Length: 376
Ligand SMILES: O=P(O)(O)OC[C@H]1O[C@H](O[C@H]2O[C@H](CO)[C@@H](O)[C@H](O)[C@H]2O)[C@H](O)[C@@H](O)[C@@H]1O
Image (cartoon, rainbow, N blue to C red; front, side, top):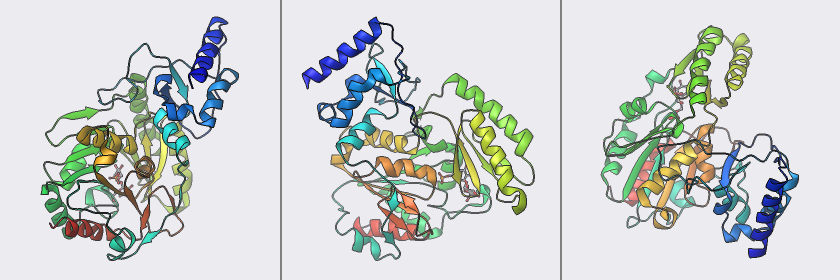
């Protein structure tokens, strides 16, 4: 292993000395993330794919010495010293460690839960009232059924009642991770003393009110302002509208006439992408998210680390439930570390979740299953 590290080091020194501008492969659809060599664990270094990746580095194109955008968030996985060599690779260190040392996570058709009884049948003994449970939940389409306007959503009474009880249980930790602005989702859920994440995790607020805001690079913030203006000027018409959430937006087109819906949506996607933002399909809407390596998955991981420390996966049980494409980031990162549920009526849906919940109303049954196990 030492030899490998040494060879890699020498390769970098030689390339630097020769002033060779080295470049990495651009892998389409994989977002660029930053890792440091120091983050490669011995286990990863023994992996054949990582070894060949390192040895082939000088032959690749587009190697970039880069600095991670600053953030007020802590813990920061790669902020271990400004002097470290940082390489822009297509995968983060943690995903390399997870993907290459274990099985590469893949979306697939997940086993379905169709009734309240299915939870214990398919997950016998998963819950243990003596072990802490972290319950991470999405809001729209999960806690509240989808409505034709974001202002019209309400949680079913049964959900609200159980959620309030679970929030008070000493062995249950509750967090709501939403694409909405944080104040909006807090107001709708209305439970004090739990953790909230808004804007797909960019804003996080702890139970005691302390904030963790992912710091977007200035140019991304500027692009966002232009993006809102341009969408409003060009595609806020025919009943479509822009929900400006300050750092991310949702373009709602539910009420646009069917014959022009698709073409107008495509124009909106082009505008979003032209401003460097990511366009995610949602329910009769497009989510425009900033081009940063921060999403519901990273937010979930941050919340769990913040609350339970580095070894959270060994200490607690985790359940995540969500219904949308943006929830898949959390389902992917929690694979093998907790149990996740994707709410979808589509039996063919491909997901990173462990289970598909066939209907939104099964969320109340999921909460009931938990509250029964914890004697709430
Ligand atoms: O992450 P979530 O809590 O699920 O939030 C995702 C988005 O939800 C809202 O839009 C969606 O729900 C609306 C109400 O049911 C519905 O009218 C809309 O069609 C859906 O896309 C919200 O408006 C967005 O800001 C959230 O990002």
